[in-house]
Amino acid sequence: MKCFFTLFLILSTGVVCGQQSVEIPLYWNSISAINPATSGLQYKHEGLIHLRLNRPEGLASPFGLLGIYNTHFNQHGAGITYRYDRIGYNKSYRLKGSYNYQLVFNDDSKLSFGGAMHFQNHLFEIPSEGDFTDISMNMDVGIAYLSKKILAGLALNQIGIIDITKEPTFNYQPSPRLYGHFRYLFKLGPSVEIIPQTLMGCDLIDVSFFSEFNLNVAYNNMINFGLVYRTFPAIGANISWTFLDTYSIAYQYEYIDYMGFSNQNSIIHQNHIIQVIMRIPD
Image (cartoon, rainbow, N blue to C red):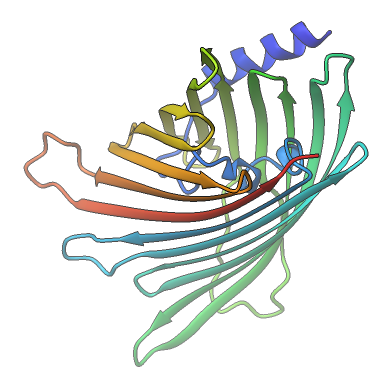
């Protein structure tokens, strides 16, 4: 049964389509912001603060803030996620609460089924014109499998959208999105680990695609560095340091070209991502 679920998730991740922008870096396991089945799946307590700064040429500088807390008790996982984004005149506030139920097998691997309620407040501020706002509520669902070497899952985000603004000044409709993710752990001796992972997804309305690939190397559970490639396109590198076996500080740099690296009319962005992480195992 476990082999069947693992094979199913790997194959599904490989063929799922993806959207054009990646919003959550995969490398530091902030994947619970996408897949509610991963909340509290690996650690008794897990907290994360994520800051994204963007340096474009000729555009208003985007800014992103993400906060996550996950936990589990017995076979129940839960989490809360807050997210703020600003791009030009657009601002968005998101609050999500997630829950999952985890089936535990004899070898300590887990199969998790999760869901989340997602509240979104989107603002469009135009100087001298006023503010336009829309508040909506929707659901996320997901499935995930965890073993000593594998983390894989599927998630469907922003389904069953309900507009809860009585008289919205503009109609913002978040698109349903399908995600697949997969991670594998290779051990090279007692001190070195190699961790390839991928995140793929699809905007189900615009049918736009993306995929992200990461290759990370961890030494002695203390220093971790890696390379990132995204298909829209972007390349990057990251490094993190873990101390006191619980806390980590991480930095990722990304070079993004929305028109393609070979296009003369390039629109260049440079992302700087900083994360502070707390992880407490059982």
